[in-house]
Image (cartoon, rainbow, N blue to C red; front, side, top):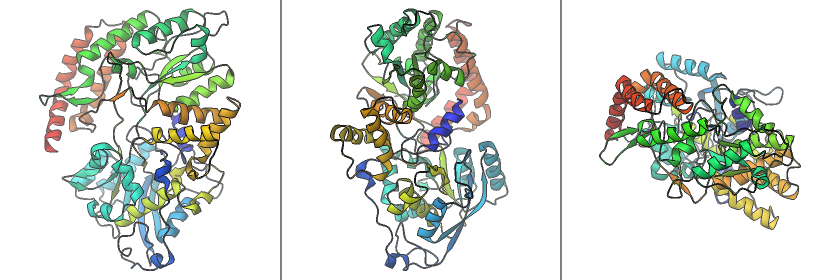
Length: 568
């Protein structure tokens, strides 16, 4: 199964759960679950509330106030690839859309909806160039900055303060230091509502626990522990079939990627190396994580592992689905991947019920910490045209939409009940959630497993609870329940491990030189790192890479980032 297919599968299951999906991180949307404490329903508008507003704006500043006369807003958005709406329903005409329209008396008119991301971006770029944008769009960072610079966007500062619902504000407030909402601000004013990327998308170490037990091995903590286990998995017939058919640590040519499968991020992080991230040192210097001495050290370790056969010798030529096939066929028993890899692991269990996967927050550094770089705070931005007659309508649509997505409003629980229709069919494809959405649900599962009592649980979490209970009672008998339990319960708990140490970058955005020369800089980095790891180039080639990288644009990027940080 391809990465894209896995992403689509993940996003399609997340109406009630948590996800790593977001536009900013290179994926296509998704959502995380909120805690029981956060699911207290916001009251639906009463009859008196619904009739008390003027046609120009809702009465007072009610986040859910219904307009007395129909308000029409135009929308441009990316469509839903592989949509599973029932026959007769479309993105532009479905129950989710009608639910929002009926609650607010807002008519949402689609100016355009394009499924393919590249085609959508072309459509947005054309609309910006012609100064003919719809009232509401969800755009990327560059498009947002371009529109803001051209004076095309409404100032949402007061609109957000007055009309954003308590739940929407709680989502943004859960991110420390206003780190998400600030990405939508320019000059102190809020010109966009950003999406939120939840914690926990870093790579866990996934291992075949049954192989460990067969070889009488302990769970690992350090890089050396991991290396020893890989060697045993390669050399000591961990599956007991009498054949030398198992391989070492799976790899991917992207090397290090937030939320990536089969990448080597945890090895780098154990040596305090953080590739592809930008930091500011105590002297105010801007430093690129891929150019530090610690990165050279980590590359040396990976180089030794590859030479010793601990890393799959064929990882350079394997595609994503090849690695997935090695997992499902039982040839691979150790890899790095995020929490949602639980679904991929279920394929191995389906083929061999004795397979038992365990996720771990390792390897640890010399201080006993699993260092991680948090995901980019946001990458998608909900913007409103400056000339929009009712800019608050965008906020109110979002308020109502999330009461539906989270099943807080009882009426929303009946929409497409039992059909699993994806949340992306709501009008605004903006992912919002609590920063710690994964970890904060774990105590709910713990209590249910202990008490076997589902009384009072929020509706949005009940399907996951059912999966956890089903798998607890009959382990691995229902693959869907097993996969959900492994991801949302077992792996999600690890994302809140006490050993985690967050290393926050100083800058997440894109500078002018990044946009112009980023592809060449990335290509040089990737090719050099792959050659060093596989032994094609000596380790000292790293020093030449750093010098060249800086001279062809890296130094200029660092200068631009420093200027951006000083301007804040």
